[in-house]
Length: 271
Image (cartoon, rainbow, N blue to C red; front, side, top):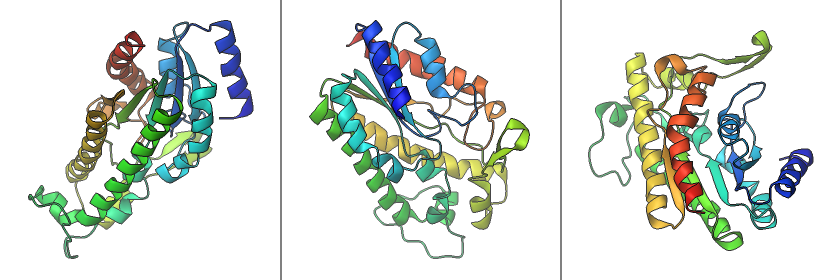
């Protein structure tokens, strides 16, 4: 978050000191380049005059890069008297270029690691199970670090995590300004390299990865006070994808209204 955005937030708290203060930490779901309506903007619009939002998000941030913001988070939580912390983290670790680390071709050996129960055939054939499990352990530890920072510097702050929607691995790139800005694709090339041929198979494998990620978030919410999870796995229709991993404006609007708003309503009522 740059100095100008921080000052705007501080000024807003001086004008309306009684309004809840919301701090967004994360990736492109909270801040898209050159896009009119990412999730943060949708939430800010829904709660205009009802809450004050600070946005410390950068598109493309991996969890490792978000961890670089932990010192700033530690300072801001207490100094800015944050009431609700929203975290969008882990998407680029699962549905980004890191995806290649978890995938394998069917003829490559499988190390199942701690997965004792059989997984769907497409997962057994194409996911390095031990590698993915280790990555999810690290990701869960990183989320726990966020929770521990919250507990130390602003214990009564409510923490809201979210699962990402099941992505659309069709190879579509993100484009802005008539094609001047381009990014991606993030999924299809890696899935094709691992031997997946049909869109249905690609989607099925990505669903499993997102479900595993969501299960880790639910475990964190169950074992830590003041933590809730927005389950947006099924929030985006096939027609609402702008590219492989980012919804259209309509998709973000519906996610904010139908999935986030009910959760935040309960959170704000409990403040």
